[in-house]
Length: 157
Image (cartoon, rainbow, N blue to C red):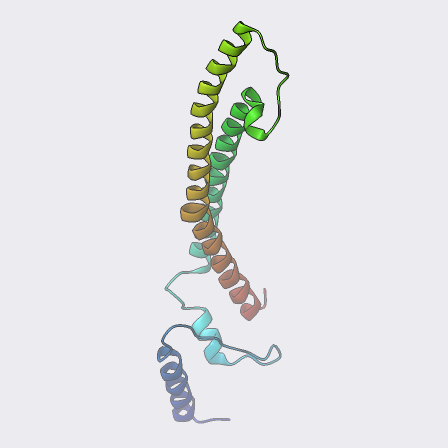
């Protein structure tokens, strides 16, 4: 059995090693015999309890659902525009050479120009939602789930 002073010295050395990491710190652990200090670290990171982590996880998942709904809604708008103007998807309409047809097609082309701008705007909003909202939320969810899984594994749950 180790003396209390030896255990405290080992704890201090572990702490010093952990706090000197500049960017990232990777900790490997033997599954059969994890260090008692690793357990102490796992139960006190960022000052969040396991219940707070589950609460944060649920909040992030709700945020993810809202962002996905917004993306879906914008995609529906885009589909409606493309349905009204199939030419924007590359489809060709039957041609006629009557005077009225030419006027109608000229008016349709003006509408298609506006529709193309709206589609481009919608696609920009979708890309912005994915880049600035969805991806950070997914990263946060992954980090929280990893932390929860790590703690559950260390505590034997």
